[in-house]
Length: 298
Image 1 (tube, rainbow, N blue to C red):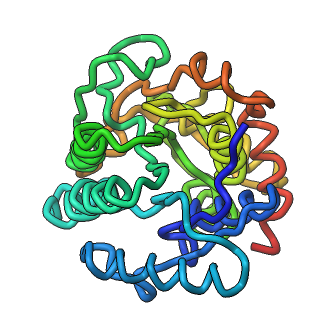
Image 2 (tube, one colour):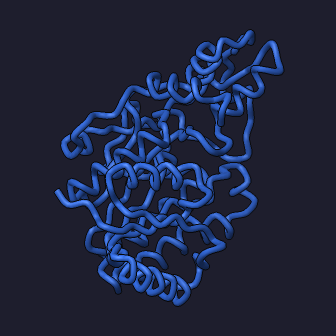
């Protein structure tokens, strides 16, 4: 087992997933540096290299050691908006990871990058394996796939790409939090019931990331909570747990048109990942219960 000693978490200062990763690393005794775009220009390789040099010098002075791993938790995640802003989506989801990959390759650093279930078209009829053919239906999905492909082409030693899905967790707005806010104000909500996926809590994903790093995992893997759900099932369970007086009614995708096309069933198979984890991930319902219980203090 081999955890890195010092990790730079891009997006760790203000991102929902990045913050969870910083916390999980710290709990495992790893020195984590939480960075945002205010600390380093994500689109400037020289600035990133200079920032790493500064961190290494500071680490040497404080006995923390040099950065030996980068976790990229930065992404353009506004699925519908990406249809009208493809350049922005590709810049953050494809060009930026490739740049980070080059820096990691040059410095021989381990690199963790997160991707998405939206690289699939949802027509398989069963949970997707990492090796299944991709066919994104949206600009967001295509831009994330381009990021995967750019990193894999670089052949960065120690590269780990984790596809995840339907994230919720403390710190920022997400589907669950928005549903609870609306349910507190309304007597009735309508939520799509014919799209299925793998709801995932950021704190659980962060813990899985640490375990996979410790197991020296590399390549392309899936990382989600266990169990599958529709958006309606996820919303209904959140409202029930919060004990809110609001009916959550199921509607078809056609009843809630969106700018981007979503896959009908993009649940992710975790078999390959489970072989590397010390602890299997919780069911999404258990993770959701913990999150909803903390909701008033978020």
